[in-house]
Image (cartoon, rainbow, N blue to C red):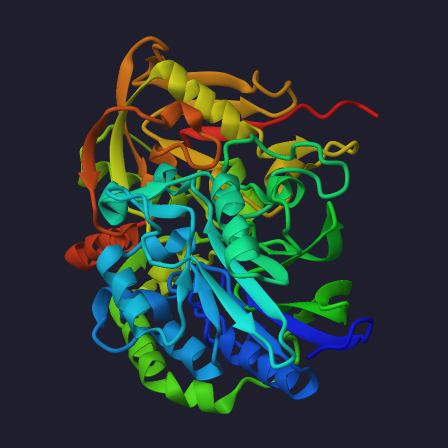
Length: 535
């Protein structure tokens, strides 16, 4: 029996990974060079923390099973063995995982298999069965009782914005509810029914407002509700976040300690709590958060050995030659690729148009490490350039929608005081969004980025004449964009003329294999211009 007034001490360490996106191995799949990323390195950090700290709890915060060739090969081509990322979490001994939006990319069957293979529970209070309203994975929280008697309640939440991106077949029968509403309901359960001394929310979502000023940093769509959770959910002590791929630690909002560990396993999030018992109740005396980098950490050799068979199959698949290229389709300067028509972007758009039958197409250069295609093309080259498991949709939109979409893309650029072009802060913060700048084929257009935002489209033609803003056009694009992803609201809820459910990477590979040789062409149908003011 605890004596009145006697103080007992306790510490607990909560470790978080988030947005691992299939990164197990510490390498770049484009060239197999070493890279300071991946669960194998994170595993070594977690083992070190367990040696140093007492009462260690480890949580994965979502977007685990998609994102690398390793994950793709397993999900699409060799799904019979246990999921390699789940194998890794089982080996490390994770306490729980949270569903991320990319967990649905390969469909409910692949996700369900991964959940069944897990030796830990998956948590999600904000995705429910459409039939009965209950959390679709069962109990959405865990309670860890420490040897000292402290009860730590951990609730899982997922951004409810998923229907705006995902293939409807992949989320059939599910309902997505507001994360803050779900949090209020279940935190009350943790406090009142489970008698939790500490409440932690692991939320696959980020922050919709500036962390210090509270000013909105994005449209308040409900995609990210981290700030709202901190300010409105009574009884919340710690918020583990993700989704935005930001690196956040050492801060609190409304007294709630927050952390977000980037992406791909570049860092491990760490929250440390110091508690004491006074008069029979545990109280938190101190809360800290930090990020532990994997840079220079030696990867866990046993984990690498466990997944070696998966990796070997993936590497063999990646190096299969699939065709040849005549001409130049390399990306030498990502900014230049986004300033004027290029062979790589034109090729992807033309494949999308040919396979869909649409006369207009758009696509993006997803990141700044896309290498383009060499003269001998392999699967490695395909997945190095088309990194997402997108599918294609043809939607019917107006000429005005096309113009508004081009204006949205034109916001990607801004001019420095010296008149140099750079990526605008809107597309840099809180994370790089190169994938939200589209380039089009089938129309002729010119963007003048010297002009005010919303007035940058200075030429827009179709078949040699000015585009009719009141007419309808069938346009092919990836499913993320067709649902309005990336603030392209003009595409939301438009008629779907054709749905092509095969991954674009597969479509590109099949197109090249069928022809044997492809040719690099550039018709220069678009460009970005600007006026340099004299100094």
